[in-house]
Image (cartoon, rainbow, N blue to C red; front, side):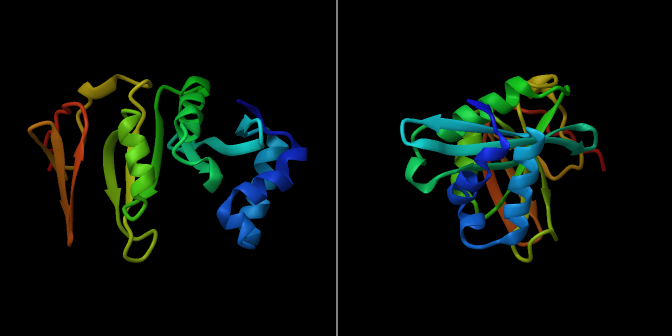
Length: 180
């Protein structure tokens, strides 16, 4: 793992399937992240395998704004190492991330890494709510009370029902206190 350099921009645009598909906004973001040193890259014998970006614009806390692993490097621990690097480098008490409900691989990675589900937001992407997670290595850990009354503990899993969506997420026991 190392900080991205401006010279990594083109290679990272090839690693990132969205940027590689021609998305100009993503390519510009990768350029900014490389210039500012906000991105951390994973390297292997074959070159750059993925990258991760932590920003501090989420209520003043750390937020993994992007985690991307090259398709050829997936399911080999690269994403987990990038998440661990993000957690160890985060300068705030809490570190969050989010992913779409449709992104099952990312949800699985976060679950295996022990991240705690802490929220569900509708309206960002039509028909695909965003799940928010908290890194257990930051803040106070799994004894947190999750506000909003949107979930409840069921034998080691958390069941969420929000509109038409119901999901169950296995994670350490969390006091899902109702605040409404």
